[in-house]
Each structure stands twice: as C-alpha cells, then as structure tokens.
Amino acid sequence: MLWAVFTVLAAAGQTARNAMQRELTATLGTVGATHVRFLFGFPFALIFLLVVFLVTGSLPRASWSFVPWLLAGALFQIGATATMLAAMGQRSFVVVVAYIKTEPIQVAIFGAIFLAEIVSLPMMAAIVIATAGVIVMSYKPGGMEGGIKPTIIGLISGGMFALSAIGYRGAILDLNHPNFVMVATFTLACGLVLQAALLTAYLALRDRAVLTAIAGQWRRSLFAGFMGATASQFWFLAFALASAASVRTLALVEVLFAQAISAFIFKQPTSTREGIGMAMIVVGVILLIWSHPT
Image (cartoon, rainbow, N blue to C red; front, side):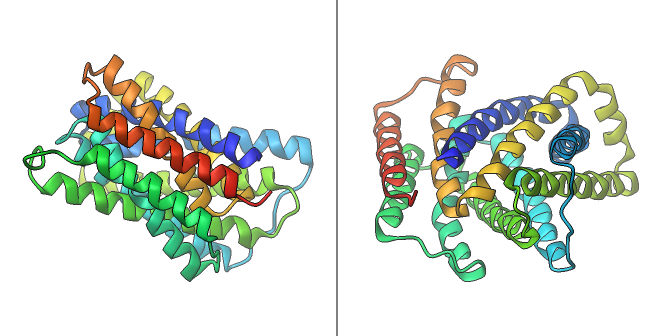
C-alpha cells in the first residue's frame, strides 16, 4: 500500500505548491507562474535522480517508445497547469480545485484505452462516488459564480491532467526497470527538464519580460519549485506502483487539503453542501483503498 502513502504525501505537497503559484500569478501572469514549477523544479529533480543513482548504481535504458509517452505527459501537464492557474483567477481556490478533480473518471477511461488498465466494479464505484462528491462541492445554487467560463476552464484542465497522468504512467511502464524508485525518479527528471526547456524557449521568443520577472521573484519561486518537484516525486512513485486511475482517485484528498487552505489562509468558510461533498469524497477514497488489489 505504499502507493497510497505516496499519493497522500503528493496531494499535500501539491496543495501547498498550488497556493504559492496562485500568489505568483498576480505578479508573473499565468504563463510565468506555470513556468516557475518547472524552471525551479527541475534542479531538485536532478538532485533526486543523483541520490537514487548513488544508492542503486544504475540508470534505466530508455527506448524510443519512451519518448512519446514522456512528451504526452509533459505537454499535457503544461497545458493543465496553465488552465488551472487561469481558472484560479476567476473562482475560489477550493472550487477551482474541485472542478479540476473531476478527472478520475477520465483517467479510468484513458487508462483502459491506452494502457489496458481495466478497473474493477468496486473501484469504479469508488471513483464515481468520490467524483460525485467533487461535483456536490462545486455546485452553486442559483447559478455558477463567475459564469460558465471558469467552469469550462477547470474541466478542460482536469482532462489534460488526466492525459498527463496516463502519459507519465506509460513512460514509467515503458522503462521496464526492476527498481520502481529509479524509474519514477528518472521519468520525473526527464519530464521536468523537457518542460523547463520548452517554456524557457517560448518565453525567450514571446515574452522575455516574464523571464526577467521570474528572476526577480526567485526566492518565492525557489520554494514553489522545490514543493512542486517533491510533490511530483511522490506522484511518480505512486504511478510506478499502481494504476493511474487508483492514484488520481485517491488524490481527491487534495480537495480536503484545499478546503483547509481556503478556510485558514483565504478566509473562505465551508458550507454545509461542501461538507457533504467532502464526506462523499472520503467514502469514495475508503472504498477505493478497500477494493484495491494488494
């Protein structure tokens, strides 16, 4: 059950990183805040890889089939992060995360199509219950706050996060290495280096002022990058041990963490409806753990 421990740790780290990125969006813009997690995250990923290499003494031999999986994971994650930050500028922190977390059903579908990872009926029930809890939390009586646009952005972001999870899970499986820590860390390092290079080149060509602004925010960005790399390390360790559908469903505990951030930092109270939704998420997560093969 290490995959469950890794997932909960990843969700906690990601919640902290999301909160920091939300604050950086005001000064760096959506693309700039998106780039922070990659540019300041990849050095930590390389350090993680060096440590694991010194312990294990070997690196995976990646084949050409590893590349498209890695590209899918990296590119969809860039798009998902950008749309997530754009949505956060229009809705409350917890509700945006809730819309994004409608991804588990999409992950289950994509996992079945691309990785042949078929979930059992109890696991699918867990996914549906937990996702329904997210929808209950997101529903606003009398209409959607801020209109339909931020809702659509959040749902699209969730879809891209789902495809990113499938891409990275496929890349990890493609390495076919006996040490799950090494394959997870190797894939993470490759992905973050690729993402940092792509976004740096884009900004150098389109908006160099953003790169200058990022440099000016290096202290806050460094910690956000560290938290992002650490959270991603735990995500990838979980992906190396369990299906993407299982990991991303258990990851809905992030909504609970986000609620705590919303209440204690952003001073947004929890309604009865949100409490019911959170209870449904907890029930779905418990069912998932119970039904997951050991």
